[in-house]
Image 1 (cartoon, rainbow, N blue to C red):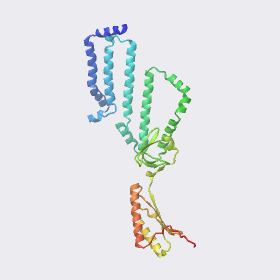
Image 2 (tube, one colour):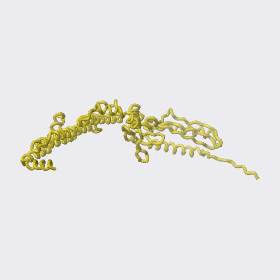
Image 3 (spheres, helix red, strand yellow):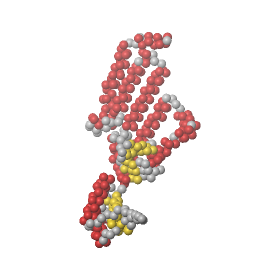
Image 4 (tube, rainbow, N blue to C red):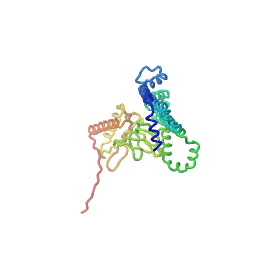
Length: 354
């Protein structure tokens, strides 16, 4: 209590001019933080003429925040003697200023590797087709993660923690950490397998045992899939890396297949004429591959004569494929009507004994 009274007496004894100067330092750096940040970025981007683009630079906001913090720090340094701050207190003030500065600049550096940053765009243009979008986004995430990890180690060092002792401690508890992080490690390696093998990329339509939809994002831990019911599913990468995946987006062509069973008493010349018309109709379609067309009298069943119609179309998109399939079905039905051919149905003859 006595120490508090002495400290309060010390504060009241500070000359007003010292307080005004300290406040002036803070206000100065607050007002001119934008200009100083702009000037520093302009030194490195001297060819850039647009003020808006300079202010959109990843380091612009971190620099502004740094100069504001610097104003407060210099104000405290100025009041060190009037407030009679001890060396221990000043050491902690300096330590906090350095830690916050490290975090601010680490955040700025990480943002310079964001998806829409100018640096990322330049990297993408340079790599061009060597790296696809999903792999490129994953690389950016890894870079940002490394930046934050390095910043974290620097902060730990600033706090006076011995990294050698920390590493030794991790070695002692390594078994526990390994057991606890098994699933995380599996998902991480699963993500690496996805990016190396590239079974799919963001935007692809994939199908697994229980999920089907469009890939929206691939992270370290999981892959986000938007299902056709519009729900979002987060699937662990470890499951995906061990699953059988159908990538419908990689199809070069789709198969159209139809089995028609016509009545047993249909004359064979009508059957031949029907087959010929169906084949001509398919060959006339631009979306159909001519060398893939099959129209054959396949089997004879109890119910009728089976005709197999099969071909491949370049309408790989599901909606366009359905439209193509529907149009072919309509034309086949018209041919059946023109030739007066009836489709057979499953029938059963039941004999009743008196």
